[in-house]
Image (cartoon, rainbow, N blue to C red; front, side):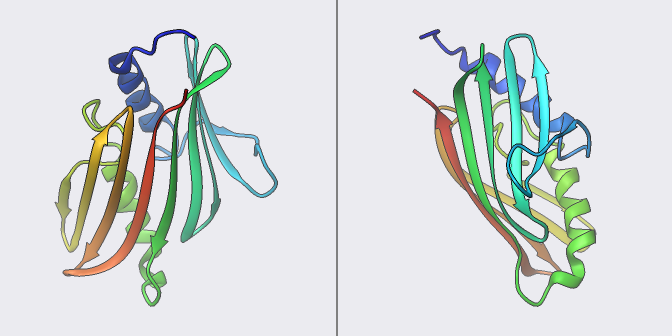
Length: 155
């Protein structure tokens, strides 16, 4: 097995995430029935984000190196009941936060970001090799969106 360069992997994840769902680009053919997929490739690395749902979803991101899976993340969450009417604004704000992804934390968005009535919180434990996290969005101080995620290196 090829040794994984975690710094290069983190940099690649940032590029992939900024080029796909967060940007609304690099859509791919569904990999499974009814999935929505995004694909990014660079060199010997391939990234695919595949999810199901709209305002509350479940999904998975996988990175392959030379066609072998080396990293993955599972996630689930979205709008809380009673706040679906804010979904369009919330997901626009979320995508802005996701474009702020950094190599030191290449999972979702920054630890905290505020814009107008929206606040984004991202608490994660671990590093790119093994991690779990919780992402929240508040509107006027009330939690309207929640997502859990976890993942790491695949061996």
